[in-house]
Image 1 (cartoon, one colour):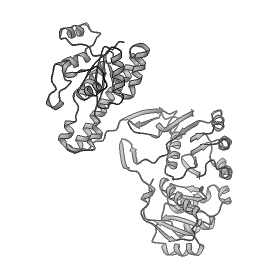
Image 2 (cartoon, helix red, strand yellow):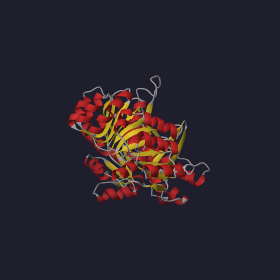
Image 3 (tube, helix red, strand yellow):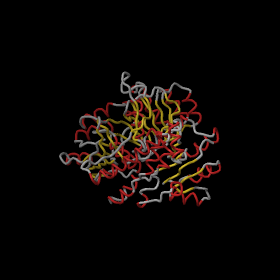
Image 4 (cartoon, one colour):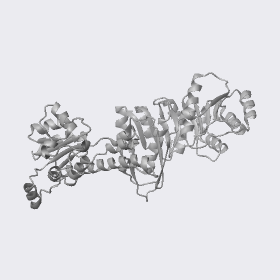
Length: 508
């Protein structure tokens, strides 16, 4: 094996005894610092302390442990240069061929204390120098900073007795990334204490090159905040053809919509808007009801997003109606085989429909951070008039509340029996929103009467009348409006319409 000597100093000791034991068994000398030294000795691993190796006693409460020409020279010497080798011999500096070092999670520690002296005492000096030195000299010294890489390194040693140059480059990049993030966490924590400017550091990781952006003449690619979960991390593509920014937005909108609903089921989007929904898995009756409206309006810009497994009957519906983007938690074998063999553009699985609490909006080169909106933040919900105790009506009422929260301003949602009957959002006012909702999907609305209507607006009496006359609505939830309250109350009592009102509006 090409590794003769390794320096190990780790805060995260996950799996380090396994790697150190492997190195020991293959004749590698190991040098280690205090805590790691004691940990490895506990496992019976032959290891030399840094103090014995350098001849320098640890000083200043650990501020100086690995700062030594014997360590720095053994890592930084360029073995391809004769003068470096001669200097190593003259100064009695042995080569160090591998470092396994990781740093304390300063970001996590800084959340636990605002004490300046405690924070400063936690700043690592020697470890970060070792990582950076090894990463600089990666051709001669293997830098390993991530416990997840231990097994890969062992497999590489077993295969060829070394780690190939291309892999060494990758480990060096990971090492530089770890020191960068460590320095960022220090700067962020101390800026909170010292500086007028309060810094938050975001590093972006490139994920996917799109075929094009919003338009075919625009290049686009997807990035995420490094170290954080993104939707893309949870999407497993089975078929990925013609992935554009607009298609990804459609996937994102559909999954975000379903995340905010407490029920299961599926939604169908046209362009970027969820326009059909059923809380029942593979709802064949509902799919038959919406088919003509979908064919009339989709223009091949539709997507189906399901929290459930898609069965063969739904897969046949997808192909029959030219739906090109499909994401579900799973597929039956027959459904997956049928969809894979078709000309569908995007076929994917997504297991993550959990609600998250962080919301960032990027505005050009600025970032807006705010707490994620939630259905619990509707404020006071008041029962103005109750005409029905139907259990399904209550379920539909909850869904309507969740939907108008996540859709755009002035949204209108009509539901019956856990199925979306009509929807509109992003309109100028409630009158326009209801007009669009009434106009859309006439085939479906002719088949269904009654149900629940959710309005994210201060709808007046004219809107309430329109909803009842066109759809015979039996339950409404809307924003409180004192201006026309008396007339609305008289009307809903006359027609037997349950009325609920909330006092906090939501802007998606």
